[in-house]
Image (cartoon, rainbow, N blue to C red; front, side):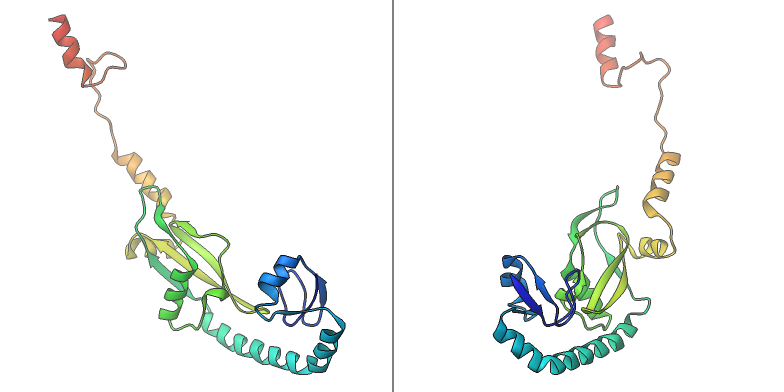
Length: 197
C-alpha cells in the first residue's frame, strides 16, 4: 500500500514522502496513529494544501522536544530488583518500570516514547533510548542492581558479578579427607565400614 507520511517515521521516510509499506503495517500502525494518509489523488491534494501547517506543527513539537531533551542531560535511573546469585532478575524490567522511574525523577515521558528492544533480565548498567519526537532522541542510563550499594559500585564502573565470583572462589575451600577412597563421599563411607566390620 502506498501512503503519504505525515511525520518522520524511522527507517521509512520524512514528512510528505510517498512510501510503499505492507498493508498490515499501514492499516494497524500508520493510519490509526495519524502518521500517514493513503496515497490517492484526493489525499495528495489535501496534504499539499495543508503541508505548510503540518510542517509548522512538526517544527513546534520538535522545538518543544529539544527543550525537554536538555532536562535529560546525564539522566540516570536506578532500579533495585531481586536477582539470583548469577545476576538474573526474578522477572524483568519493562517499559512501564522505566516510565514510572523517569516520571518520579520529574521527566515527561510516556510508554510509546521509550525504545526498549527487549526487556532487561539481568543486573547491570544499560543505555535506553527515549524518543521524545521522531527527530529528537536522548539516551538514559538504567542501573539495575540488587541493593543501593551494588548500584553505587556499578555506577563507578565496577563489574559486580565478576568481582563477586572472584570473592566466592577465594573464600571457598572444600574439606578434604586424606583417608577417603577416591570418588567416595561422606555418606557412603560409614556404610562401607559397616559392611567391612
